[in-house]
Length: 114
Length: 116
Image (cartoon, rainbow over all chains, first blue to last red; front, top):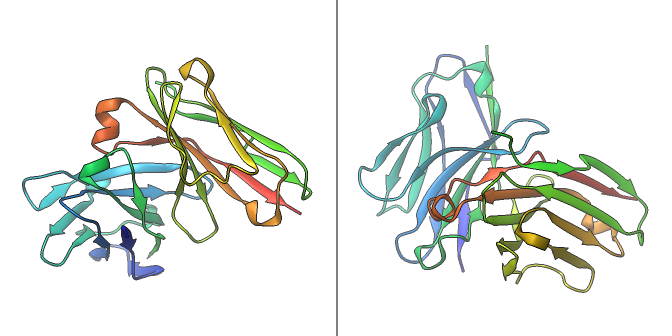
């Protein structure tokens, strides 16, 4: 079965420090990988994606993510966190046999403290 | 460019009552998705449309849920009768065929349903 795991329900980090939000997946083949962000009472917003190529992808708002095929991981990172980054982050995967189908993780709440 | 519009934003009903949610996707987006997001969980697909055709409705509880996308633009999701377990946020998303293939889903703000 296809699945996406976000092992941390919550991540706390001080403003200015680097942040990492973890994601691992179990999907056959070479899936497409994504990160979305959700602010309170808002819909999900696309952050970045990995399709192929360089394992480090850059996205919106200074975020980047590192793809590791051997560990089936796609961790979200940012070198210096902002208070405004506080939100709910979702990892998603799309299998290459049906790239219009998306499996979402359960989400990680990021808290950035001043 | 206007985003995905959903209504109502909030709905409170008693169990066994019917409820309907409406979605207007981004102009020109052929693919439309309805997701359900339970508290503390990620979105789960209910149904996906390509134009007017429902191409993936395997997760839609068809005994009480129905959806339609007449003319391939707006869509309506209906629940009848609602049960307590239907309390959730119902998200609509849209994409163009190319963007759907590379993951750029555009989400509405969602319709939060509370069933009492």
